[in-house]
Each structure stands twice: as structure tokens, then as C-alpha cells.
Amino acid sequence: MSSFDVATNMGGNDAQIALINDLARDLGFRQITPYLNLLAVEELTRKVPNNFFLFATDGELGQIKSQIQNIRNSSRPRVRFSPLICFVEVPLPMLISQCIQIGFDDILTLPWDPAQMVPRLRRQINAPITFYETSTYFGPDRRRFSQKRAGSTIYKKSQGYRRIDIRRDPVHGVQILGDSTVGHVAKRHSHLSTNVAI
Image 1 (cartoon, rainbow, N blue to C red):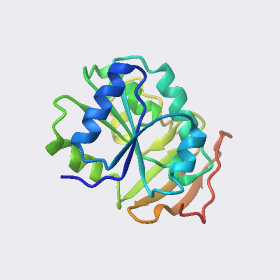
Image 2 (image 1 turned 90 degrees about the horizontal axis):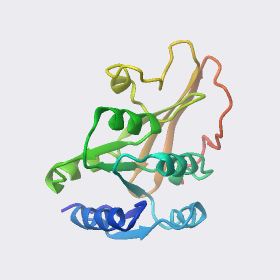
Image 3 (image 1 turned 180 degrees about the horizontal axis):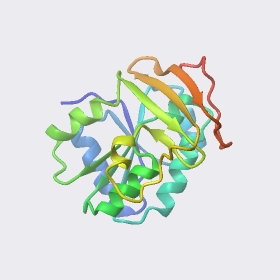
Image 4 (image 1 turned 90 degrees about the vertical axis):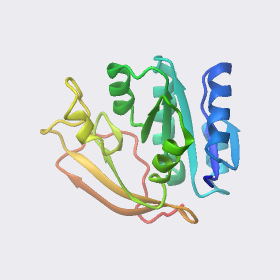
């Protein structure tokens, strides 16, 4: 069984909340908290090194996109670089592509078998992870997916980007390993401090 610390339940309705609670228990999370607001999550991360945000979608992504933008714009690295996981029951190609473009760390589809999901969640902790920031995207490196999918606009060869290398340490939380910019990156909400590991 896994030993993940905290999951924040981002379910948008009663059915999604129940589903995420069940899955989080099956995955071995020690604590499952409902999402109240960003301030409450930022306060929570003062006490826990890593918090997984667990989402579920049936195809509607409007509210989820807004929530992810708020999380990724947090001034606290432990929130901004938290693992964002989405459970998708019907993996329609367009829906998966949209989830990638929003900036999820992983998208889990049926069957939701803990034996298969736990190793994927473990990859989010204590391993180097590269994030990219452009004028339209902030999230984990998804170039290998965007290159395979027609119409994906995560990266354009002509635009500048910011590359941020992190590690989510199981004891100390998010550590910034590197931060570099290539070309000109149009302004977006960015609150990263490169010498913070919190």
C-alpha cells in the first residue's frame, strides 16, 4: 500500500467528490481534505510537504481550468508545483488533449486499479520534473504528447519559454533545481522565487 500524505478533493459535484474520496482511500492517502479555497490550501501546505490535487471530469473543464490557473499562480511553490491529477472515465482524444493543455501532471483513465495507479503517483514525488511556462501554458513538460496530437498549441517554435526544474521532496516539499529562460516570454502571473524550497 502507498503512503501518500494529503489529497485535496477537487470534485465539482457530489458524485465526483464521492468518487475521488473512494479512489484516494484506495490509493492510501493518509488525509483527504475538501477544497475550500486557495488560502486554506496554502495554509495546509505549511504543515505537509506535498499535497495532491485530485480532479474528476465527465467532459466539462471550465471550472477545472479556472481552479488550475489559481493553483499554478499561487505564490507558494508547494501549491504552485503540486501534483495535479485528473480521473477521466471516458478517455475521448479531444478531452485528453484538453487536459494536457490545461497542465495536469497525470491523467488516469479506467480501469482505476490501485496497483497501476500507485506507481504513476509515486513518479510525482522525489524525482526531477521539468515545468515549462509560455504566454499560454504553465505546467509539466508535455512536448512529447503535443507533438503527437494535431491542433495542440502548448508550444510554438517561435515563442520563448521559461524552464523550471523541480523536485517534490517527500520531507522538505518543492525544491527548485533550475530556472532558465529562452527567448522572450510574454508576461503571465508568475510568483516563483528561485531560492525557496517550501
